[in-house]
Length: 241
Image (cartoon, rainbow, N blue to C red; front, top):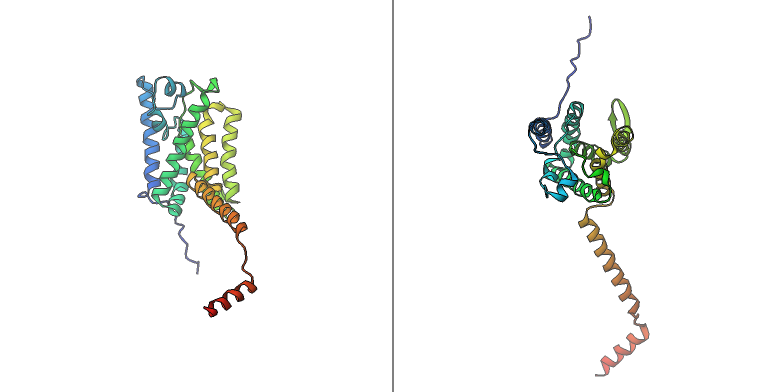
């Protein structure tokens, strides 16, 4: 008698999660943003020179969910949905969205600041979609640390997984326009600082703790031990009265 066939079931991430909604926003905003820029004079991507001279500060927000390449949209959506879903399970929706959006927004601000020193960066239009995708990739890997994960059927540690994401950025910078990956490189650096060093609040608490520790050490040097002989004298004087 032939053994019964086992059905292979493929499980996909839930479509009700914040990661799934972020995926939908990434796809829709990329398509709509491309059509708007193609048919109008409005720019939704980040142009550092326009932010500085024309005060188009809204570009620091609108550039975040954009990517104007078909393959970038497809693979970016898959990474946001699957890997972002893992981050959401670990951290929760609020923390995941706060870290990601703050990181990519800060990357845009620092890119504009860098453009004041690098002229070739001023007039380039930048999309932050892959800064968002890369942040999810690196945060996921650094969160795993030395634990193993699956990368296309190969077992790698979380740190190696994060390094692969950074290597992709390096390849684009070498073979393409390096200006296009400046926000992504800055975002990945911010992710590393967040995971390995901490937030500004964490650094402030560490500094406060170090300051209090130093104060305790300085005060402890001024203290003197009371000898047993002095205690005996004080006890005898107490009984005389």
